[in-house]
Amino acid sequence: MNDVFKYRAPTSRAELFGMLAAHGEGAKILAGGTDLLVDIRSGLVRPELVINLKKVEDFSELAWSQSEGLIIGPATTVNDVLHDAKVRDSYPLLADCALTIASHQLRNRATVIGNIVHASPGADMAPGLLCLGARVQIASQRGQREVPLKDFFTGVKRTVLSHDEIVEAITVPTSTARSRGSYRKLKRIDGHDLALVGVAVTSTDGAVRVGIGSAAPTPLLIEGLTDEDPADAVVAAARDAIRPISDLRCSKEYREYMIEVFVRRLLEEVR
Ligand SMILES: Cc1cc2nc3c(=O)[nH]c(=O)nc-3n(C[C@H](O)[C@H](O)[C@H](O)COP(=O)(O)OP(=O)(O)OC[C@H]3O[C@@H](n4cnc5c(N)ncnc54)[C@H](O)[C@@H]3O)c2cc1C
Image: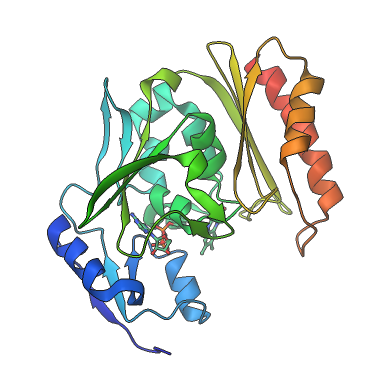
């Protein structure tokens, strides 16, 4: 058990990867810290070394290129995405999702990639990124690999990442820019709260995708639907995919009911 930990803030990728390789499971990455520090305080995580990646050169990148699309770097905050002109113009769904996360102050620290790597079933950035076909760029001292976001989550707060790997970027392809899309988050209160359910729906060149949070151990993507499919068929596909539970926030039945309501409403909006 470690009640104290060392802290490092490398400025280069090589330095960061070297630290991760040397410390194995004992090292934890710190981005905004809004999940990690809560986990450390509650004793859920007891790292030997905390590595702040926000000072690594170029990690604050939020860029756009015709070949790669939108590139979201490890230190890009939720507010960076929310206020970015390119995001608001081409991927407004991402700004919709970002706006639902906590408060302005928290969004100033919290990163988009931290939201995804923490892999909470209710992560608010996940449904939109899933619908938009996001890909995860993973890097370590051993090299680089890319996985579609839909294959990144493996369970509640679990992902395909190894201990020596980081997410170096999330990319969103140009093919989904200007998709029509919207996100709805159900909360217990009007103010800041975690999602009871979160649903995103997009229509991209006739293809309909549904992203759902807080309805299974991982955020879900439902694909293979088209603009021609009746709402009942889209709802049926969503119903087949979800595995909601009852917990202290609400019942399984309420989640099932509200997912259906949101899918129907969002379909009407995007069509
Ligand atoms: C009061 C409060 C309200 C919140 N409300 C919401 C909400 O409404 N919706 C919501 O979705 N979330 C919410 N959260 C959760 C949290 O703010 C988000 O998940 C946030 O985006 C996490 O980003 P971060 O940069 O703070 O991550 P951190 O806490 O720094 O990291 C989270 C995890 O990811 C790992 N990590 C981070 N970056 C990388 C990387 N590049 N490569 C590898 N591993 C990495 C860390 O080691 C850690 O395990 C809330 C949290 C708090 C404290």
